[in-house]
Image 1 (cartoon, rainbow, N blue to C red):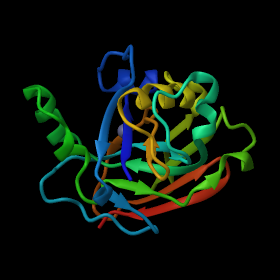
Image 2: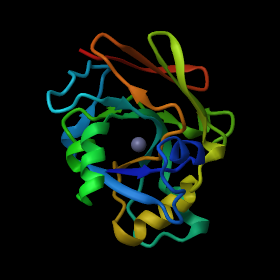
Image 3: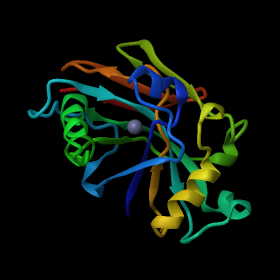
Length: 203
Ligand code: ZN
């Protein structure tokens, strides 16, 4: 199983971090050991002083495939979850400045918060999925997948040119504006439409 993540996939988020809007999806990965499931708490890592949340819709890949063509892309995912791409922003900044890979800032243990998966067919509209993240009961991120720069089907085609999609893989599809820092004691809650799917305390 692999965890494929997309960076800068909402215009308003690319702008808030002063990054250019990409012409092709920006891909990175997290190792399976990054998964944080069952609403477990996240222990603030010792190597960062600027841990950020990034709320994302996560796709679950349901069949194997390479070089997927656009007309078939929708057959490769059938469930979504609420995910948090935890990011050590200070470490990432240093990596970017040096032109180094991001893995230590993005792929560390428990950096991939994940709710249970729900069927896409249970949602009102699988192309306009509303989601939101609250921190200490205040809404900090609110997104809708209609605003994705590269939509789910485009991502499936693009990713599968380089990496064989395998059943059980996950795709973190990018975060909308509103990312921000976390402190010990913060309580996060994630929602897709009106379903409360994820809780995470920072310890
Ligand atoms: Zn992200």
